[in-house]
Image (cartoon, rainbow, N blue to C red; front, side):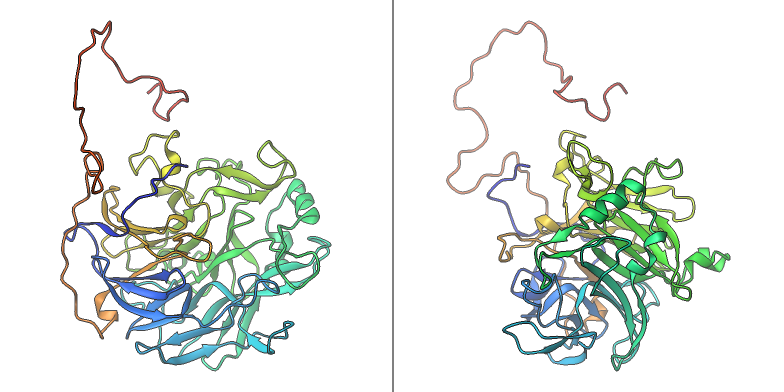
Length: 479
């Protein structure tokens, strides 16, 4: 896809009358975790903290990690999960899931945390009325790694995604390992064959020949209070865990008591009950919208597209690994009982020509979506470092592009969160100043010529030009 080499960063659009004002937190490249206001001012930086993701809690606390394991020995293993106060002091830490001795490093206890965590009091880690995460006590749900062997999946070593819950003192109260529930995941014979031969083998890791990152779960949260459970549907018990696996195109709910998978979307999307959704590929941040927010009880997910899944070979996947491919992203809100798509944000809603320009809303990895109290949705288009807020009618009311690059020369943002001003009592509510969108058709950088021809002649035409068929059919052709 083509992008200009020159583009604005920071806040680029802001409509204070329609956006939901607050502070936004994200990982700023290799700088650390940064907190910005609605005009993009960096109001606080926790320098050196690693946010995978970073979450701000009431009182100006931030949660993140203080280090990551050398990738020669592990994939995205964070040393710990810590809660840091406004002044950078660590006030809570968990790092005791596994004791590891990597060659050339001092032996350390690791949390092996990656991709997600939640604190008791709030199911998803972002603001919802009456659901404040605890900051001085409480249990913490953590997504972690564990190396396992399971011959029924593959004869290769596997990197499993353990979901654990720990108390304030760091004792593991509950653990769930997806490899132990392989038969419940719904893989067909073709997918099983691909998985056995190559469970998404990554060359990183201390085990010779790499390790199979077979599911790559990237979100885990509590289902939280909801009307489905209140009306008798036990699958949606507030303590149950909803998670999604990027590499398998699966979103699922695990029953907290039995450990069984009681609700699932994917990996097969050709079934009559889900065919209308289309294949969800490589998704991130699947969660139930918390009670008290518009759309409460519905599933909200950033459907990345890109490449993921296991199945029959095809031209894009000669061996059936990462067999589902799509070059654009979607944000989907789905009723988890009827499976109706009740709201979506795609390239079409963004105003692009589909499918020719579908790629203009596209992040093939990372990314997230957060429902805001006014019904807007904060979207992290992660691979482009673009954070933006849209109304339920798809109007863009806030946009910010990260100016920070990482060691891979990308300005990627894994996930961002908006929190209310009162969650950060150390700061006054900032002045909110509107930012009008630039008219890119006439904007020029200094030294560039303005739009318009210096010399004009007219040519006699045979027929008036009418916009018609493109080289590929558009989504509205024939309507």
